[in-house]
Length: 163
Image (cartoon, rainbow, N blue to C red):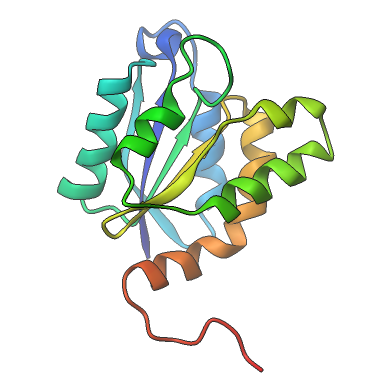
């Protein structure tokens, strides 16, 4: 069972002015991993708050996976990638590139996504866009690799492929 944290970055959502449909979409999509949500928060688009929550979920709660939604675009308040990079030990650019490549098949706006993916200690962190539709499109691309990635991050010696 993969333990998961969901962080939604939304100024309006954190003030209770908007329902978090993207976070709920993440929760729906990961059920078959199998996964159990152990943390779910809606926080404002503030770098220090995002960093603090990522560290809390990874270091204190020791979650296997953190999925963020929101703040990955080019608006002035979109700071999720910077906050995430600041706490990562290693980036996983292949995951970010795969999400953007698949999204580009659907919209040219995908090229302005700045989402990052990476590892902090033994936690996989994946940034997702802020709309439920974009969450579906992006998470579906990386979902098949998440279980294996988590196993490897935790030190599994199992072979990655068969010959």
